[in-house]
Length: 121
Image 1 (cartoon, rainbow, N blue to C red):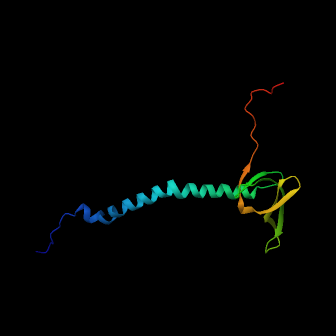
Image 2: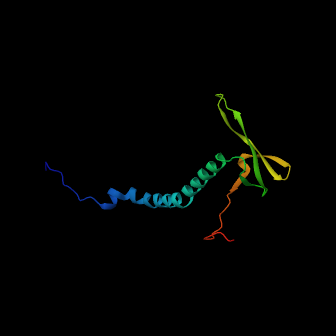
């Protein structure tokens, strides 16, 4: 009379809403590790590659043009600091230079050493 009866709690009542969202969380985790994270890492590598461009680098543009960087200009930002320009002069043939936007460069070609164990004579 003075004590109310205690009923056993149902497991689904306690964790019902959490178990409904668990598959959605798992799907998001799979998308994160298989799609989003690798894409962010590639973008970070591309920004680092474009930031490290210097004279003499052999590059490939988005249009498939292969050339050698001749000049990486600098411009003053709003604070007066010198920062690399978005325009880069690339020599695509002897005495033929074109100006390309930094963002259109897709690859920097690095020379690969031969895998010979000792130089041939």
